[in-house]
Image 1 (cartoon, rainbow, N blue to C red):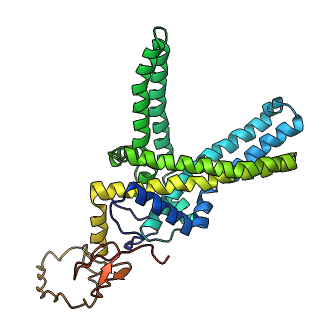
Image 2: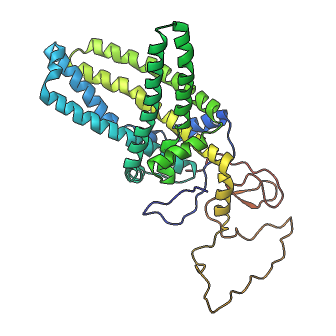
Image 3: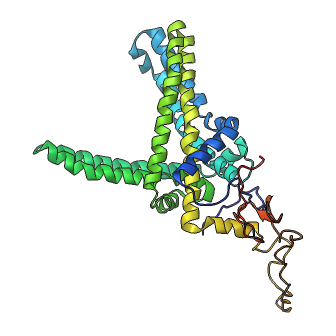
Length: 368
């Protein structure tokens, strides 16, 4: 079973999830998306805003050049073209990094950690080549499907337009399915620390049966994008009219890109939660985390291997505690606990019911 791999500076500390690790419906995913976004608003914006520190200067440079020269030919200057190319390459690289850093940050938040902006980027930097390779293979696959569909459509239109449309529809459906099956590649690479091709394979497996929910999440993000664009682009256009020239162009760029900065975390958080939901449903990730939190594996003080000359002594059996008694302490448990409202027993955060009386012990957002 694929699990979280600690970074080079991380120890064997167990994780205490912010939410109960249970299968989530589409509504649950969107609800938790909004709650996580709202509670960690500034931290999330600090991660996704980094690439836009280059987007805004690029737009301001292009707009100012066109406004001062009054001619599109001004953009053909070799020096200006070189600056554009370098800034665009840096922009693409930073965009990949911000997507991965956002997924890593949300993953740590979901599991009860407290991520930092630099910590998430430092982790993702180690997977830069894997992310680029995975994105390249994804674009290549979708490009091949689109190119074949274009060729089929061009050949079929020589006979009948209706036949051409009917022949292109299967390619469009195939491309759509491939796109949605690969939506979790970023989460897989930065959370499980795997290579690009393995990340594509894992995403394809985890997204099995999730097409409808992924489509609903995507439509939700589109609706939010439309609303934000309408709310923020109108003030930007008004400011550009009131303040003409380079200053107005820069202000308009800042306002227009603000909607993108606010929108990006919505899809990133939702698909990271969908990643964990898929692992819970397909790989019993909740049971894996419960076993870790209850200390099933030996602790650090336990010897790694018994001496070859000494036979280990079997543990003495202990009598079970009565149902009404409260346990003296958790058996080698790590992380926070919640208290059963019925019998007062301590229950690990990831366990939905009390181990003593069987009552359900709800747990919402943590205290972080």
